[in-house]
Image (tube, rainbow, N blue to C red; front, side, top):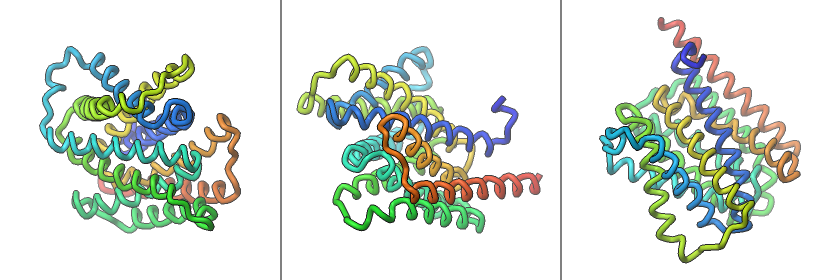
Length: 290
C-alpha cells in the first residue's frame, strides 16, 4: 500500500510512524528511569537494538561494511547523547514539557539542512517551521515562569538529534538503511555497556518486560526515521516531528494520568495546521513539476 504513495508522502508517513514509536518508548523510559535509573534504561534501549538488528541481518554480509564508517560513529554518538539527555528531561520535567522543548529540533534540522546539505529553504518551509515553532512556544510558555536547570536537558537533546538527523540524511543517500541501524545500536550498546557496571540496578520482572519493549519499539521507530530521511529532504519532513507533541500529550494522559493543559491543546493545533500546510504545498509543487 505504501509503495503506491509518492516518495514524499512515504517519507511523511514513515516520520509520523517513527515519532509515534519514539513516544511509546519515551513513556516506557519515564518509568524505567525512576526504577532502574538512566544508564540501565539507555543500555536496554541500545544493547537491545544491537541484538535485534544482528539477528535480522546476520546473513547479509554487506550490512556490516559501512561506506561512511566515521560519520556513522559520529551520528550514533549524537543519537545516544540525544536519547540520554531526553530521558533525563522526561524524568525531571515529565513527558509533555520535555517533549515540547525537544521539538525545537525540526527547526534546527531545517536550518541545518539548508546550511550544511545545501537543501532549498523555500517560503513554504519557512512558514511551516515558524508556525510550528510558534506552536511549540505556546506549549512551553508557562514553563518559563520559573526557570529550572533541567529544562536545558531536552534542548541539548534537540541539538544532538538535529545533528544526528542531518548526518542520517547525508549517509542515507548511498548507505544501506540496515547498516545505519546496526551502527547506532552497536555504538550505543558498547558505550552504555562500559558504563553499566557503575550504575547497575537489578530490574524486576516488570522492568525487564519494559526494557524489552523499549528496545523493540525504539528500533522500529529508528528504522522508520532513517527510511524517512532517505526518501525526502530533511527540511521537508522535519515539521512532522512535531506530531510528537500530540502523541506525548495523549500517552501521558492515558498512562500516567497527566492531562494536557489549554496551552498544549492550542499549541498542538497550531503545529498540526503548520504540518498539513507544508505537506500540501510540497505535494502541490511536486505535481506541478511533473
